[in-house]
Amino acid sequence: MSELVLPGVVAVLVAVLGIPVARWLEATTYRKPDEVDEPYPGRRWWVPFALGLSSAAVVHRLWQVPDDALPGWPVSLVLTLTLLVVVLACVCLAAMDMDVHRLPDRIMWPTMATLGGGLLLAALVGGGMEPLVRALLAGLAAGAFYLLLALASLARGSLALGLGDVKLAVVLGAGLGWFGWAEAVLGIYSGFIVGGVIALVLLVSRRVGLKGHFAYGPSMMLGALAGLLLAAPALGAWA
Image (tube, rainbow, N blue to C red):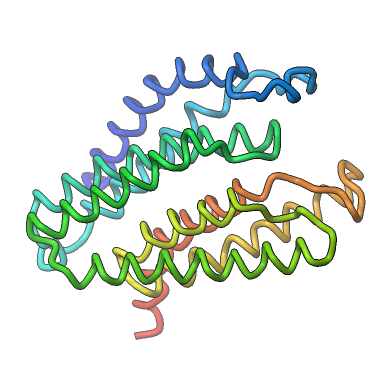
């Protein structure tokens, strides 16, 4: 039970702080001039819950592990602050993607810079170069893979995947890569599974057609969260 105290406290605090974030998203100030006439997305009541639960998951993964697996509290603290910023950005991006099917660069680029700077600082304060290099390689690999998918989609005359998804793949791949290759691979792969399930549900419910599009960014984020939480237990079960 004590293992859930810190994540629980973080979940509540972040959820409360997420209320003004939800209100800001409801104002849709992120829309471009040609998007202002799109239907109103509705209340973003789920935003505080998503922020709280995702933040709790990150804190649980960083702090509720055996002591010998922690390189030191400075590293965990830096990673916590960095990833909480990434969580905030991802939830905002998910809301925007579901509204206008776009991942704005004004949030994406600062998120990439924050993650890169945070991982570098974590390496310098005791995390070491190995996880930093792995994070960079995982981010580049995930981004290159999604770039190929985006180009293939474009060649077929579809915009199912865009450059925003490519940048998001870099962020998610790098963040997961710090923890290990298993987290990165499982997180990216799980995004496809989640996306496939969501697409099937939308098709069955006739909310999109066979040639329709849906926001793919949230699926990638949910998959990354699954990789973060499930990779280590899965490895332990197979060990």
